[in-house]
Image (cartoon, rainbow, N blue to C red; front, side, top):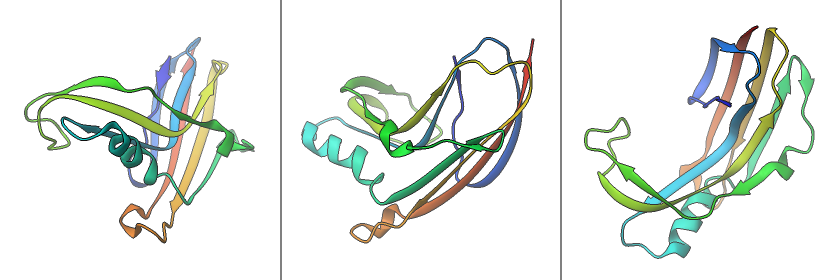
Length: 143
């Protein structure tokens, strides 16, 4: 499987990938982890940033429909965050969970493909979650 992540803002990325790999990408997702917080607070933290989101995605210009039906939530899992991590998060072992809208694609045929997804979150209850993303992946699938 090939995992595409989404950097913030408006981004165009080109990458080469092998044929025969399924593709997974989050359109809008949240992850939370805490050492001592109640699990209900971890769940709330992971989900509340995904509320009030408007999402869209296309593959080679063809719009994907009903993306709101692709919302999934993980079970709780253990995460180990190392020292000096790229997120400047506290190191340690924590319980975590993920909530979001994910697309899972069957392998694309060899050739060039464009995957584009957009997000606009305007949360009237928690404006700190407001953000927008416009990500385009130009994929080159090699046989």
